[in-house]
Length: 164
Image 1 (tube, rainbow, N blue to C red):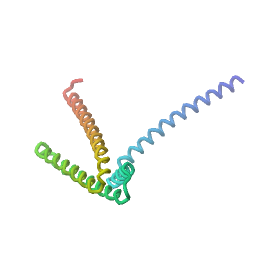
Image 2: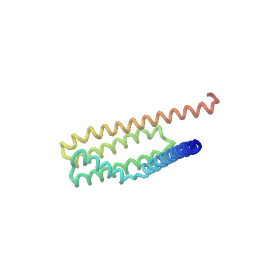
Image 3: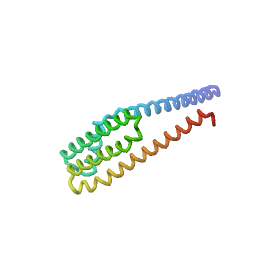
Image 4: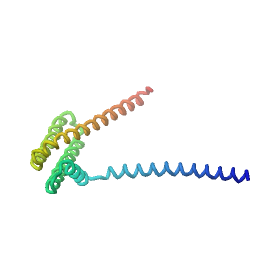
C-alpha cells in the first residue's frame, strides 16, 4: 500500500512539472505571436483605429469618421515619405535635419487644419488636448528610445576600447 501511495505521489509531481513547462512555452509563443501581429498593422488599419477612437470619444457622425480616417491616412503617408527621405539622406544629416523638422511640423499643422475643417468647434476644442497628450506620449517614447540607443552605443564603445 505504501509503494502505491509513493508511486501516485511521484506521478502527480511529475505531471505538475510537465504542466508548468507547457504553460511557460505556450506563454512565450503567445507573446511572440502578438508582438509579430502588432508590427503587421499597416497605415490603413492604424487610420481606421484612430478614426474609431476619435469617433467614440467625440461622438462623431459617420461622415466625420470617414473624413478623419482619410486625413489620418494622408498624414501617415506623408510621414512615411519624410522618413524615407531622411533615411536616404544620411550623409547630410546636420544640414537637412532642421529642414526635416520643419517638414514634420508642416505635416502636423496640415493635419490639425484638416481636423479643424472636419470637426465642429466644440469637438475640435475637445480633440486638441487629446492630440497634444498623444503627441507628448509619442515624444516620450522617442526620447526613451534615443536614451536606450545612446546607452547601447556607449556600451559598444567601451567594448571596443577594451574597458569593462
